[in-house]
Image (cartoon, rainbow, N blue to C red):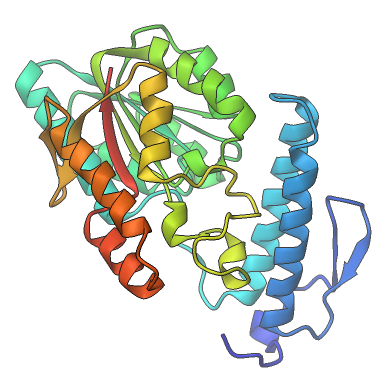
Length: 312
């Protein structure tokens, strides 16, 4: 990223920003993109440490996290050349979910309840809500106005501005057919994860599926610390739970979810005996021992070591 001075079109109208950590005023006058990103990194790392000092599910933790996201998004809009059009979802992952939902409707002849954790800017919502016989639920800690307004356009869409745990509490038990999270689980807190997945198990229907896309720390870090740390080092920002394939599988299996499906070529295939997933775990272990990080990264990418499908 060039270290040039900010041009007028890229300059924020505000010359200062307030740190959510200590309330100090940070001057942004005349800073380069690199300097703005440095501030983003320094403040996000400090906020991540402070957030984990508060008790699980506390209002203090939730408030600081929300303030932190608003803070870093303000900075990112200043130093990134273009706005991100759809964080939280990608065309490829939405295609995987769309195919899975259509296949389940065709196979069962029943409407499907789809739940998306972290709707972001609504890319997945806009595509999946068009599938006939779908009832769509979703949440995010912040709902953009244009995303929230979609609930007025569709009578089969229910969105809430709150955390995943809070939203799942209000869902009926055994009510979700397809649970979808694209680059969301890594934002959960390790000391809250067990409660969330135990709750999610209750809310899923029998044979319901979880479709998850979680950054793998072997190829990370993937949050802002990727610009400052070496490959394979733990993320120190708002990615509290970047996990390996092995760690993800252990977490989900601990909560009785079964890795009996796998994503291949954009489609979900059955893996009834879990042998394909077992082979993937063994391959990940071997790949993780490769010292050449470039080779390791390419091998990880080839087999989608950030994508998972589990069943209840």
